[in-house]
Image 1 (cartoon, rainbow, N blue to C red):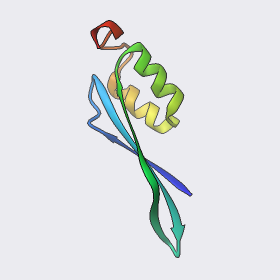
Image 2: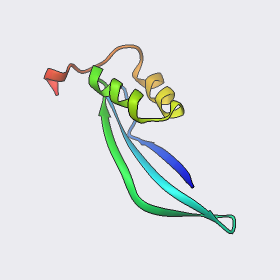
Image 3: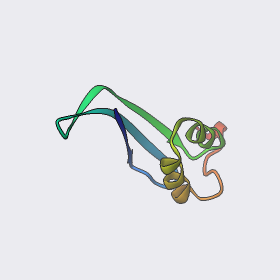
Length: 77
């Protein structure tokens, strides 16, 4: 099985992530199961969730855009 992640609307303040699982059959990829979706905001909690729930390639891409500091405080959300 193959899992593919798509980062939608990645900006300085947030990102929407979709994950779909595929099987490979006769050199073709076919989606199986439901699409997993999650939105994260650039807060301390959102950053912790990204680090906990996503693979390193997606983490690196998100944090490259988000930078070193959160743009939201949980009380603001």
